[in-house]
Length: 162
Length: 278
Image 1 (tube, chains in turn orange, green):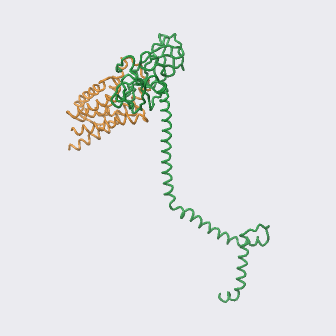
Image 2 (cartoon, chains in turn green, blue):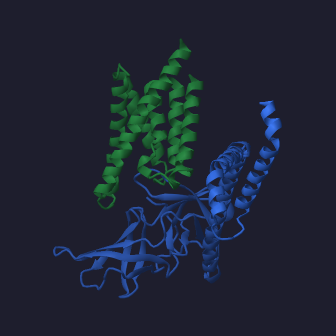
Image 3 (tube, helix red, strand yellow):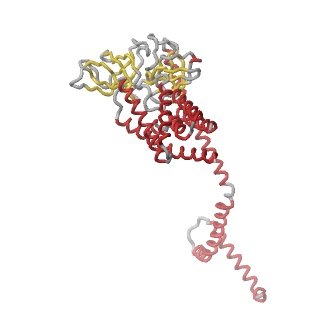
């Protein structure tokens, strides 16, 4: 299990490095899926025990490092996301494509709405409609990407176990 | 047949010679005017010359287009590769020229600045949808500290937020958490600039009685110590005067390009101690 967690962490770190240091030069931000977020959701849904926590903590640390959010907020927020996903995992018996798609989209939406509310409370102006459309595209893209990636990775892990 | 040749060989030989003579006359084309002989010669020997010409042309086509072209494809391929290489080199050189120009602009600013500055390259961008920041390749190892101003020749870029050994994170002017004291150059109207996303900044607390118009240039006042005095923020792009409000809604477009590749970090601690962006 620990090897699987490390593999997920490795993939997430590599993808995030590409997303931060390479892709922004020629890909708009809303077309760059958030792989660290996906790593946390994957750890919550498909891994268990200490490896899951290790994987989630690494992804949370990565999000904290590459975000200009206030100190520790991204790390703690991501860990909270992990706990919520774990809770969902206990109740989500069937981990099929639709459930994965819905849970990833729901958590992304929840995160963006909560951060928007906090920013509005701190005095940030209303975001333009165009931004909302772009954010919707980002959420849809990340959720759609999650389905094949999660299914493929979990299928491989299952095969290895068998 | 043998008897016939034996009997008539002289006649045949002389006839053949005459044909040759005719042929030579026609082929040389001595420039003389048309004669009966020439017409006859042309008419009689046209099929022969046409046949000879056809064979010659055919042989020449076969030679030129097929036999002689063996190896041309290879040569073509190598030439194509060479052209592609040269194009790549040309692009690289063009890029170097552009970079040179940008660096010269940065040097010009560095030479005229009264504070020490260092150059840095933009190596990454924050991809989260809520915050706007860039990563530069100068960190605490180069003396960079949180709160230092980051500029380009076109204007201000932002403020250093987080610093590690070889890399720093810079919050851009258009980030919602960026605020600074600014002046509208023409009317000397003071305001607080706050990031509004999408490369724009809004000016807060501009009284409805102040004269601000689209196109006015906005500069940093330097009073809050966050950005050097006189650094350009950008031009006013829209002014809205709602009847029910005490203040105008002024939007400024950041002058510094959002995709700048090289920036300058002003190596001076802000006058007011920097508090990390809340």
